[in-house]
Image 1: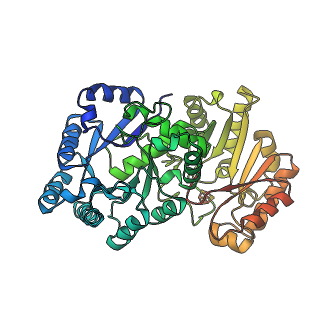
Image 2: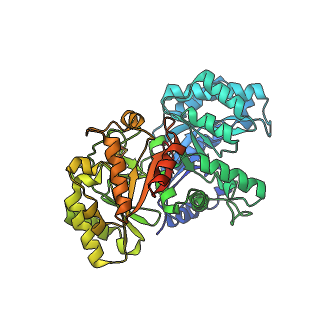
Image 3: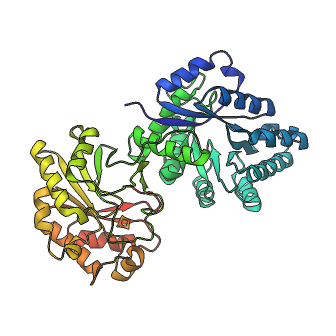
Amino acid sequence: MKPYIIDSHAHLEMRQFNADLEQVLERAHTAGVVHIVTVGSTLPESRRALKIAEKYGEVSAVVGIHPHDASGVDELAMEELAKLARRKRVVGVGETGLDFFRDRSPRDLQEQSFRFHLALAKETGQPVVIHVRDAYPRALKILQEEGVPERGGVVHCFSGTADDARAFLQMGLFLSFTGTVTYEGRKNRQWSEEILSLVPLERMMVETDCPYLTPHPQRGQRNEPAYVHLVAERIAGIKGLSVNDVARITTRNAVGFFGLPVDLPSSRLAYTIRDSVYLNVTGSCTNACTFCQRSTDPVVKGHDLRLRRDPSPDEMLEALEDEGWKDRSEVVFCGYGEPTLRLPEILKVASRIKDLEPSMKIRLNTNGLANLYHRKNIVPDLTYAVDTVSISLNAQDANTFEKLCRPNLGPDPYGSLLDFARKCVAAGLDTVLTVVAHPADDIEACRKIAEGMGAGFRVRPYNEVG
Ligand code: SF4
């Protein structure tokens, strides 16, 4: 399956594409690239970027003057940029920032131009595209002084340290990655592994920065948008996801950030992550976890899980069929809610799955409060329906649990969760306790609880769902 992907930073307006732009766009289309953001680096290139975006619906433009050319930024230039930035097909201001590696413009003028661009982004209500090389602390300081534009910012072709990445993430910025993360040298591999593990996918975009920075194994040729999936592949390898997972999530990020005219897939009953097919059983829950995005942004790994109503067993089975469940390794009952609220429906669908494919693994993701909700022990029912139960423990003690998960059931929801988990282990179900790496959690204490009852244990990153 072709990835459905966006190249969030290209330079189609550069002379390297003068001769064959149409063919470049055609190859991008064939490779599954649904949109390209082309980013001006000078005034003439910004004008050309806009022209290209006006001609081709699958291209949007960002306008700005690169820090290399900051010495040419004066009031007149900024006035023209301001006009360009308000045009319909323009979706951002940049690329601006600081490049203390090449130092092609004096540093004070680079800083002045960066501040101008930040002000312009605020004035025009556009997000800002930032270029930084060997100047991360200084760029951060300027952003702190000036403030990030309301529509946000992205640091393109991120090349900084782990501390730089944390600092920019803390300011709410996105980080975008190019072919440099695919380069082979030992030092580069170590760097990209560290940074890509650290940055949540929900805060990443992918780009080619073409015609430069061609990803491995195409390195040596001119770069073009059709190669952007190679960047996604490297990220997928580090994150333990599929390239389609990375493409889908970064596409959603780019569409939201730039406001791109791209239709995103609508909400799903069944969806795939890695090699598992998930069934979105309900949007209702017996908890109201402080970290849950159920009511604000119910998106998991790029899949929109908004449900207008809970699906019937027949609808679930139909959705599984559409998702090609028989080719997957596992079916998971989940939802942005608590699936065991729909216990009879789950049992019916699970039994049908086992009838059709007896070897198919079935997992239930649950908050562990089913026995409290149903006022009976449901574990014997589960033993006929599922192979694995993944329970959100989320806290090392009852107090922390109440504060973080805010259950609406009683008495003693934490005690009931632990009892449910023990019963699952005793019934021979493969049982895994999970915690979100929330600052209030004592991960080691949670691990001991899991080990103490003979269950598996998994930590899910805070702010990274799914
Ligand atoms: S248990 Fe899951 S779905 Fe329910 S509130 Fe908590 S995070 Fe959200």
